[in-house]
Image (tube, rainbow, N blue to C red; front, top):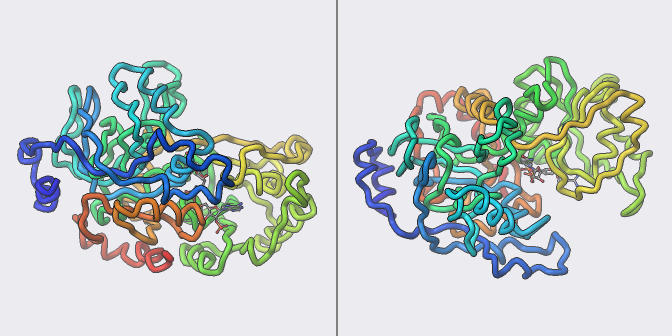
Length: 446
Ligand code: NAP
């Protein structure tokens, strides 16, 4: 693999990259089908990704029609890495088997190992038949939307394709390895002012936040909107906060400690709620929601905003907070949800929804266009990566454990082929302009 790394570090062009031999095997962070029962009966928090994620050699896949093989310099941990590694809500091997059955070209995805990872930055190494937009040697990032586009259902909005999958979660050969297999239309230009690990950390969460908050497919945020953002210093939240500030909205950021509160204030948010300090108990017990606490939370938001309720709520904690989110939303406002980290069986009081004409909108990743627009914001320095810590590939399990235990801020990066941090910056002058914003999250990783 060293010859590939050297070629990338030397900035080799298309011909040189094309002439490099591709190794038959590469190192990757995987989970194993034979281990899907190892956490049987344990509570979710005790299912430790350090036990289920292994870094080992896997056979290199051949890029098929419309695909590309990428030399991965860096990747990042997403919460789907955690879900995959604790085999919740389902082991991902069922997804791989279904994908392998769906089209002949996907047969190779059904393996006893699953290479995780839904982000990457790197260099194109090989392209399969029919790829014209990308060629070996180009520096890229990848978004994680894999679609077949064989059905008309996905032609207006690629997320509506019936064969829509999240690469590295519902497909194999994801970004947490020295190589990765992508559909070539997942590739986007790497933002030139960022290092490999900075460039690799935004794709999934930034695109998700963009669709959820800005796109008309989500909440369609406008200037002046009050936006309640749960987990505002986390993956999705740290990008939603930037998008709200940039777009002239007024974010109300919820976090659970002062370090995170400072970070979101530094991003330009004025209104911050420390949920740990306030001690909200949105449930009296496991089965009984506590509307008095929803009211106390709503009153706090009004106190901060001068009496305004949120036009938009960025929801992802799920069961724990959903009742409160529906309650505090403004008449006619939108609760837009992309996840259920604390449990997917939600309870809320429907009277507050229908009588006040509120909307609940489901949102999932982003379509091609939204992913490109989100990447363009990063490339223009209008949204910055929120990378706080970086681990070597060998320690992917530790990195996933940090995210599972919520001791991280922003994003956690993983170095794949990149031998150290800070490499890959192609536009140092522009970088200098963005440096302070990029560094905001860097010292906060524990
Ligand atoms: P993350 O980096 O762990 O951030 C989540 C934040 O939520 C945490 O920082 C935490 O902030 C807050 N939080 C966690 N549990 C909470 C609770 N019970 N009540 C209130 N706040 C809570 O994760 P992420 O990358 O933002 O992802 C969040 C969720 O969205 C995950 O379930 C992930 O799988 C999902 N997701 C879905 C999509 C999609 O396309 N559908 C895309 C990206 C992510 P504080 O402790 O500071 O409050």
